[in-house]
Image (cartoon, rainbow, N blue to C red):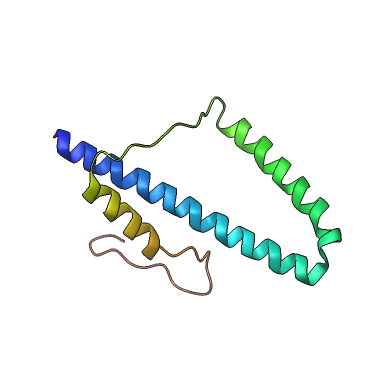
Length: 105
């Protein structure tokens, strides 16, 4: 049971970390594209205000959250989690139907 727990924990930590990296990269790319279209001097105050609002909301929803170092307890779980995050779609719709999981409605 201990090995499964370590593998699952490593998988989840790697998945979350990699998804976070991908979301930050997508946000940065969208911000740069918007700055190019609207002009950085007009967009920067809006982005700063949005960032402050997001931070306030996070602190409201998740009070007392702290950062900590991750340790890889299972290399296979970590590799699988990173790979799964790389394959995960970050598309929020795009006109696609949700995938059906066999055996579920």
